[in-house]
Image (cartoon, rainbow, N blue to C red; front, top):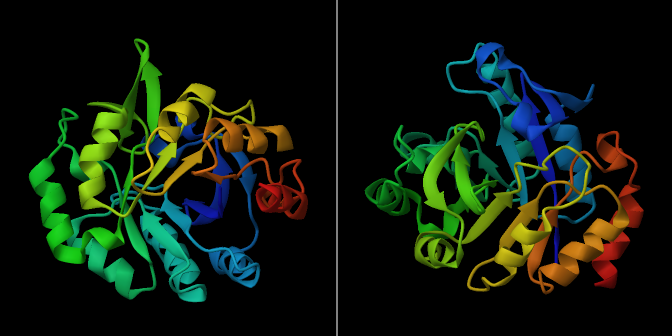
Length: 260
């Protein structure tokens, strides 16, 4: 199990938010932490710690009046740590190559792969693979439980797709990407504990790296992900870390990863 850094950017600021509270209208979100420092500070910090495989996420819609400042912060992070982060948020075939040239190791995609009804557009995924290569693609299957099943969420986790998160979907999409990122959107940013059932589902898939994010509230949650994920589900921690205003000491948290 590997620790994966994260830098989330909203309205031009590095933030930790309650994911399910994000609204495009008015660019609103419930905030757990808003940094006075810019994104390159955090990228430099993770680079100095020797931590790679992280994620920079732009949380504003492209037509938001705040998108440009959010975009500039993302570029600062990528330039500060070339190859250290994948970048997600509004990625399309047209923008993917530019982010890779700016220093992203991967592009992270969800909404681009679905139409407005939530139907998976497999041809669009093929186009993206042709443009940048599967080795540069992370598919984000962040999901929420509904009617006893987990459904992939799109549009910054505001809308359900038709796709259930299950082993069959992971196996199919693994042919077109190098790894997966999965937030438990029902618990993300709430510091209320991980989504154990979701981690168990992810543990059954071993063909590509998978990173889980959402709900870590204490050091025991790190150990739960290790146990339930069978040692091969990686973990992102945001709001819970003191780096982002939370209760968990960063160095102590990292020691749990080294111990496992």
